[in-house]
Image (cartoon, rainbow, N blue to C red; front, side):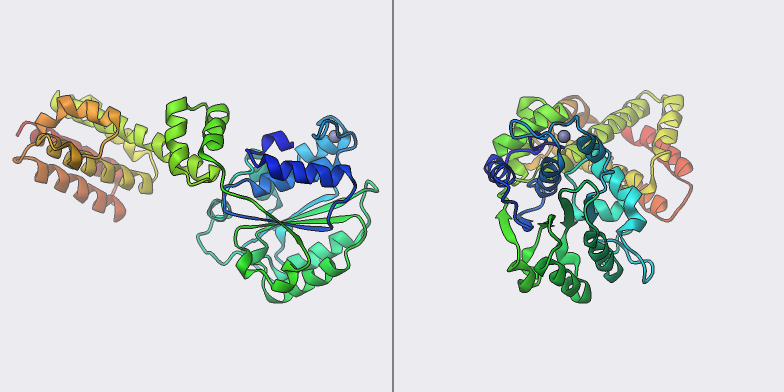
Amino acid sequence: MSFKDVIGQEDIKAVLRRQVETGRIPHALLFSGPSGSGKLAMAIALANYILCQHPAGGENCGQCPACKQIAKYAHPDLHFSFPVIKKSQTTTCEDYRKEWTDLISTTQYFGFEDWLNIMGTDNKQALITEAESDRIIDQLSITSYEGGYKVMIIWLPEKMRGEPANNLLKTLEEPTPGTVFILVSNDTFTILPTILSRVQNITFRPLPAQVIADALQQRNGLERDMAMQIARIAGGSYLKALQTISVNNEADNYFKYFTQLMRAAYSRDLLALKNWSEDVASWGRERQKAYLEYCQNMLRENFIYNFHRAELNFMSSQEQQFATRFSRFINERNVIGFVKEFSVAQRDIEQNVYSRTVLFDMALQCIILIRK
Ligand SMILES: [Zn+2]
């Protein structure tokens, strides 16, 4: 993980490089700023730069044993602490080590919600536990394995309350020599003021749209126009841009299955309708429900399209193109019937009725409705 892997924030990279190169690394740094601005990515890049044995040209070498260990997140002097779901009094980050390592090996741009999902919970009570703060102190009391620095990255220190926060404070006051703390926070208002007073704060600003667009082109293979369009609504957060892409991909897929269904219903192709219902039934229930919602919306949009009131239509360009030919099949005789069929199917799926049957019955109704 090098500085070049961190999107934008060049001024911050320059400050950090200078601190390391002049040997004036603060013993505790706080990276604050909005989610999706690259704070965690920067913390890892900085840790790598500090621990690399042969840094050159403002970057870590990527070749030395330290760099190789960091690439696998297996360096004995690089530690992470983060909020976890407390299963017992002894729960620490060690219990989630594999999940965490898998995640940061895949991406350094993710949010608290993503992490909760990976831990398999929507319970927002994930915390940096008391047992975890003891573990931090234990780990930092040992001298570094390689004889140099030890880096402790604490992700979301605002999730550390009461006793654990007080314990950490003592360590921040008198750190063992060579220890570097990097606190990565989305919300510094809830961190103890006594902790804040002991760290050097570096504020990350939202990323400019141009920078996000470049990253979307280079890292996610988007076309320039699409990249710029998404970057503009991302509000300076690469994370938000990524979330928009995944929603867009899903919409493409929903569109594909909507047109498939309508074409098969129009041509009374029972085999195609059966295959369609089996395909959709194989998705998770939540996704099936979201798809049926999408279909209802498309039906309404196509009905409205007949009135030639562009300001009332909200369709993507491919949906609109389809509507030029399809909208004439959705009229006052069938629009309500269509929407009702889809919403009943949605409700049945919600109530755990066998999806494949529900979807196939609905597809058969579409044969009748589309001819009305
Ligand atoms: Zn190296």
